[in-house]
Length: 277
Image (tube, rainbow, N blue to C red; front, side):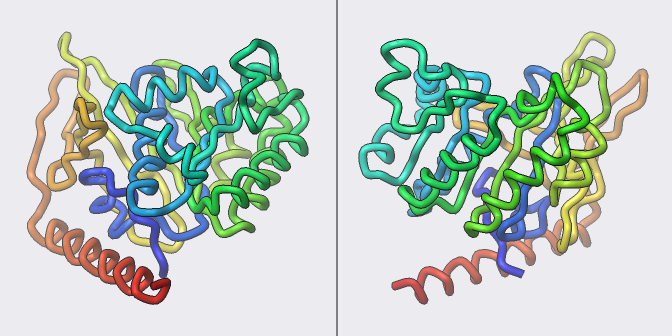
């Protein structure tokens, strides 16, 4: 099983080495849980390792997208100039002077074919292997019956071109779903981010709900959003009730298995680099 390492501290451990190659992973959660940060961190980490990346902006102006990368010290403009990173503007419809300077613009957001063509072109131009769509929910919020069809169309293009993708999905505060039954079954993996209030204190957590073709951690892990991005406390789990929260250490057996899986994934990456050279 070839894996794509996220290089997000702690995330590869709970994925037992990383995301299986060509998988489409839904990153779901309410507002403020860190979904977009996780997606951008996944992309930027790939860029620093020589992998091309594409960000599909459905809810942010491309200018804001670049600024949000820079907030964490992630200089994507450098990779844009080198032709290794691209932003697809599916937000402005081409309206505005800044939007007119964008290379990839989706004029009609309801036209999935136009969006797919832009994604295909950007992948080929940047030789991308990592894609983030933020947020995929925008494409079907007003037409939920089309959700599965839309996700499957994008999946065929992205996975078919050899890429691994994160689809950001929004849910309401307190909602425990992932983005709709059609979407949940269409994607290869689901990672859920949560922000819970217990006794006046907010707790961030992450859980891998499903991931085809690989073993995953079966517990909820605490996580933080730092100045350098997301950090998952992979060797601990969050024990939560309606009245109390405690952070407990994972059994040593699980810790050792995760460490071993990450080491094996790192060896695969090294072999792949040597073969390409």
